[in-house]
Image 1 (tube, rainbow, N blue to C red):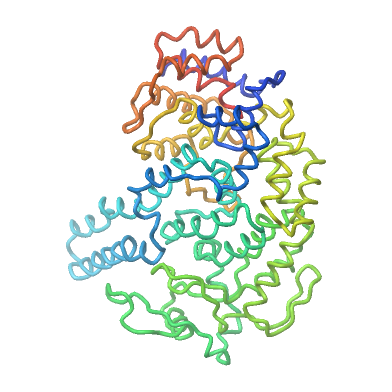
Image 2 (cartoon, rainbow, N blue to C red):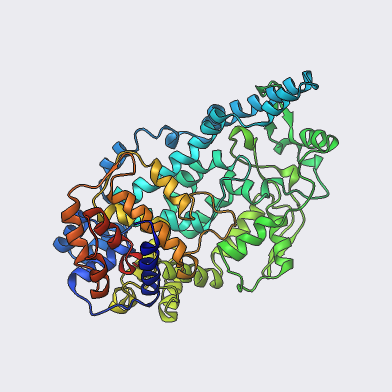
Length: 535
């Protein structure tokens, strides 16, 4: 299948993905539509559930995941030990040994400066160290894929992915990979159907976000302020391969690092203030100015981390904070407010009309279409304002709207690689005993989980994912899945699944699938079809 003929088929399919139009609705199609948006694609059990209770009740159930038993999920995640660890525990077991090993290599190189062979060996990364360091993100990626494929709480998993992407943090930046497990578990997951203001503060105070957007390094250029001595945290730096053999106050630590020319807070950093308004709340056209960015950055000085390399938590350090008055979007923040300066900014932004519109637009784009219907966006924004940013009610407004349920919305969204891979697992009833091959597939499809570099996160619109090369990669995955070439992943009753999938295809695609010479090819062509690329 991996030849010129396959590429010709994929070229045809690529055109089909772009041109496929929704046809008249049937009950089964409406069920498939709901499961393609509220969930990560149709699965047999969910289809039967909706046939029994109806779409309205299913959506209401999904809006209350706390009421849904999901005991089977815990069993699937049992072997992923890092999921339940704190950032400090992860640092102690994974990062600190890595730092100590690197330090030992450097000391050895200094002790033998003339030995070029040893120097070359020391410059090479240790495979075991790399494997250990990568384990945390690999397990986090495995749990995302497993939850998306098998959790009864499908909407919650869709929203955890959506909001993590909205408040994106890249695992490649420094110690961020060791902070992400707690970030998703504590800052994102508990708040996806709660109040937006709570979600906003949880991300603002997360060490992962503080490190990723550099706010932990942001300080009043006129500080540190000695008159806030009592508020200074105690730091235990890593010295000579040991964790914290004595306490050093933050200003002393800063002065030492500066004297050594090392990376330490030297002044105001506007990265978080800018992205907070542009990407997290108001949107690029939300009415803020560069002066607002500076004032917001000033408000968040002192929001820092106690020892990020040791998995430390959020800490407000008054010595680094700019105590002067600020003016943010026309709101005066009085001098001397300390930590509350940043909290006031979060209040201002969470209740700003532009934020309601920006969040409503993003959610409507995810659930309804790449060009969100303006009337529905306004309705969702109004609900945001009426409920003080209640994300459950905003999401309910969208999922119960005529625009969401209309046949015209069917198949109008192109699946991201994550949606494609998981929907293929669900559609084929595949049994995943080892999700690591799927983690590698996500990388090969151009969407490595937790490794999106820009703070914008991955795009969820068609232009980012529709091209012939990407579809060839998707077809290759489909063929490997159907052929049993992914270790630890099996598709039961292949012939029956192929037959049921073909029923959902158009005549042109059916004709192409009919040319398959084996059941694995038939399933692969079905999963690679224009219809299956859409949701």
